[in-house]
Length: 405
Image 1 (spheres, rainbow, N blue to C red):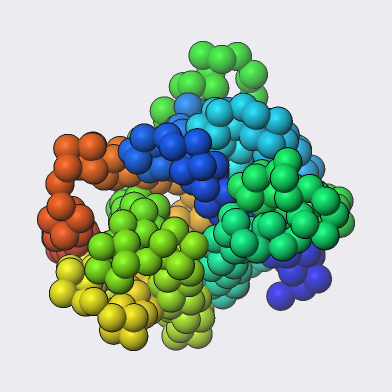
Image 2: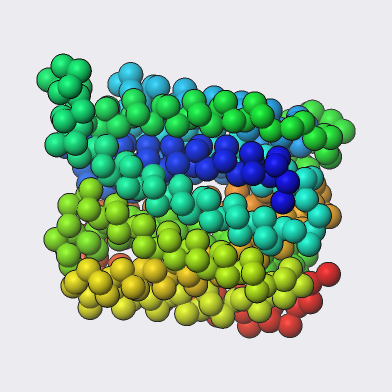
């Protein structure tokens, strides 16, 4: 791995860290103003809408400019969204603006890997990328949870005489803006690479046609289909699991929001371990062999129903993370490899984001509806776990004999 790769890694880490910390700051803001309980899952929903609506545009945009410059522009949009939340815009609307920046950012940060590295390095590169993303999720949850803690915020604000005028969630948002600024500075150090796969026409109709053509191309390609299906499921599951853990911890462990957010560190740390194992032991040619780990994953959250103490909970969440990291990293690498060959890196990552975020939208939306309908959290967890295992079993039976080339 070269110096440019580590620069990209650091830039995306800081930006992702800010995204995740801001999620919990926004949840804290909603709680402070006594918003309805089902607004919290909607934060994730409004964040991902941009990935779906802008998918036809962000792929060509990422391929039409040097991807380091695209990352800088996208990070600026995220920073603007953070400032609007601080200025008093409703958290759902402000976080939607941050989602627009994230939708622009993703095709560039993953697409640049295929331009910078040879195919045989993609699994290892993705294990690093996944590991740092998971670290951002862990630290984002911990930092966000700590910053919205009223006692912590008051101790800091009291030293500068602002404890009476600044609430804890807004103190958290101020701190998070510095992370976006740091990411922007590092974006400036990413080297310019040759522009790849520029669209021959900028006509809106042609852009939509090109997006639809890429969509069909990936889903009809057997290797594109399996990698897209698995990564789509993974991100929908991951987003919903974070919300489930908070609700489950409140019932089974009697934890508040600041403590529950720290539990997500266990599953995130597990994903980092699984990512490292995949990078070390799984080659791109054997990517399909990791699918059974996804089948096992579904049974782990079901086991949480009977857990009422911290240590068993941490072990189960760690196991869930290891299984998830082990199967998603090779699938990400396989999708980038096939996408780069079939249509261009930015186009394929935009397709991945489009499908993944429809999954997030559907699963978090279903969770919000279940909460609003007063389903017991244990019932929701049971349905969620069985859904994961059944879908992964179907994918494995369909693709277990596929050969990567």
